[in-house]
Image 1: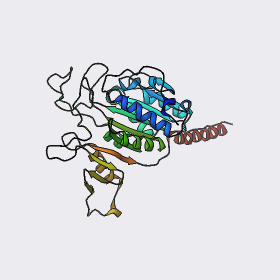
Image 2 (image 1 turned 90 degrees about the vertical axis):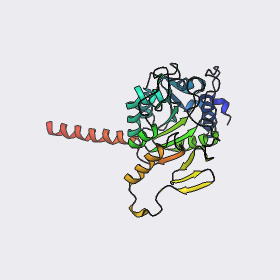
Image 3 (image 1 turned 135 degrees about the vertical axis):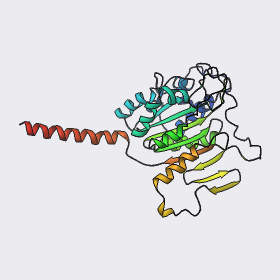
Image 4 (image 1 turned 180 degrees about the horizontal axis):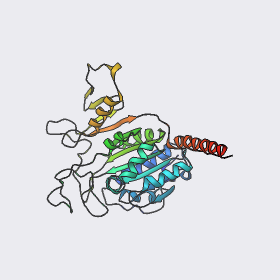
Length: 305
């Protein structure tokens, strides 16, 4: 199936060099590869540069209000939990005014895929500090440099009990498509953070895919579920080799994954699939609650009679 069936006839309007173009391309590629029809997919966005994406896809879509895309999407998921449902958001949209909506959708395990495009700056409103801006980053609202520690979206997802967490670069189409396929196959909330530079307001926030540090080591570590990391031609297990696997606990695993998600540009950022776990989706839990409520009502009526 051709990706063209998922592209609308609207002129795509982002700044030249913006990573949103790549996300649109690889997302439409994967939607076609999944064999879905354009009228079987819903895309919901909030406010920001990335949130224009529903206009450029030939599918059902909602361009909602600032930070509330996960809330609108939750309503859609409850009405039809089997519908391919995608939320497009940015670091400002999801991690500031929409932070509580974002995290509650994650902890409820609503059946949706959230694509969080992180460029560490407010782009649409012309270059202000965002919740993910790094310390010392100079912006229009912090001309001497940001003094607040940045939020890490994936760390928050893991802390909220998320069931799928991944990260990639906008310029790495192979990894992005692999992660998108995995995210769409997951039942529950899958959160894919996409690193991207803003060509106008924050161009050098992330190193390129092929760049190296001053020692000649690769700029990124690749990880995929089993804790085995790939760093250039080096492959190693990040867990202590003497660790007794029989004593491994969710607490230890959670601490390891959160530390991995926090690797910053000062060290070696990690990309890949961090975590995946199957748990009941929010609709299933809602049905259980409805059944319990119904039984309680029946019992009260029997007492009254």
